[in-house]
Image 1 (cartoon, rainbow, N blue to C red):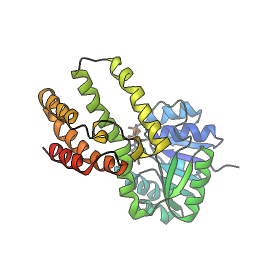
Image 2 (image 1 turned 120 degrees about the horizontal axis):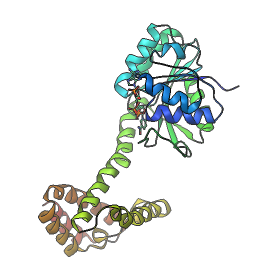
Image 3 (image 1 turned 90 degrees about the horizontal axis):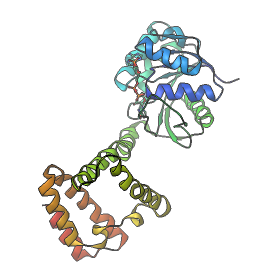
Image 4 (image 1 turned 45 degrees about the vertical axis):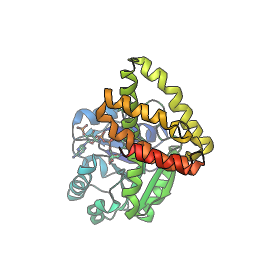
Amino acid sequence: MKPVIAIVGCGRVGTALAKFLSEAGYRLSGLASKSLSSAKRVADLTETGRFTEMPWEITKEADIVFLTTPDSKISDTCSSVAFNDGFKKDSVVLHCSGVLPSTILSSAKSCSTFIGSMHPMQSFALNEVNGSPFNGIIFAVEGDAQALHRAANIAVDLGANCIPINTEDKTLYHAAAVIASNYLVTLLSLAFRLIEHAGISGSDTWKVLKPLIEGTLSNIEKAGITEALTGPVARGDIETVKRHIEAIGEKSPELLDLYNTLGFYTISIAEAKGTLSEKYANILKKITKG
Ligand SMILES: NC(=O)c1ccc[n+]([C@@H]2O[C@H](COP(=O)([O-])OP(=O)(O)OC[C@H]3O[C@@H](n4cnc5c(N)ncnc54)[C@H](OP(=O)(O)O)[C@@H]3O)[C@@H](O)[C@H]2O)c1
């Protein structure tokens, strides 16, 4: 029999966990959130009878409690459940923050629980979930051995895997996640803005860029980061880079610093690839330093 789960915090991650854990055969003891409407929405989605604004009403009978509030509320939420004697003895309490340690749940220890963190390396942008966002992903886990054991079973049932992470390494691990996901969005917004200046707009912007983006990701997957690099820096095409700098300076000068910084960092990748001579690398370094 699978353990019973309580979800506290019915936002994007809480919604996805509730939906796909329940589809994987876990029974939910209930849903709790700051607002009753969020808890009800996920209760309806998962056909769970119990939803509340008072988490201890649904956590007490759970074998595993997920605290999926915003990071800033996890510790206080945990304390209020512990204060109300809301954790079952020997249950496991987990949070999903990428940066915070499991020890922020230490108040739950007073109820004889095991604590851990289980960070899904995925971007949950919407409350509505169709295909499982957990399929094939990695959860980074740390905390008590009993919590890690439960986390590993949950990951497998969600079609995912776990890797252990040192508590002190979580911040850098999370910074990598932010660069790979959030700053990819930022980077593409830069490309969108420039292509719109070039007269391509609306849905055409995505239509034009999407195959390039997907082709690049596919090249990275097949050949690795270094081999996937193409373009003027990789070719040592100084004149093209100069033209870019001139045109961006005219149309979107606020983007120039970022363009130059990215270009500067790209030089070392081109050198590692072996397609850029030292002479051209030095010229490009001068140009992109402004
Ligand atoms: N989003 C991602 O891509 C992502 C990826 C990996 C890990 N995470 C982690 O997952 C966790 C949840 O993130 P999220 O993106 O799902 O956040 P979110 O969409 O903002 O959802 C958080 C939910 O918690 C509820 N809440 C706020 N304060 C509460 C309280 N005091 N008690 C109970 N519920 C409360 C909110 O309330 P109401 O709706 O009820 O107002 C909201 O629905 C965080 O630790 C985050 O770091 C997120």
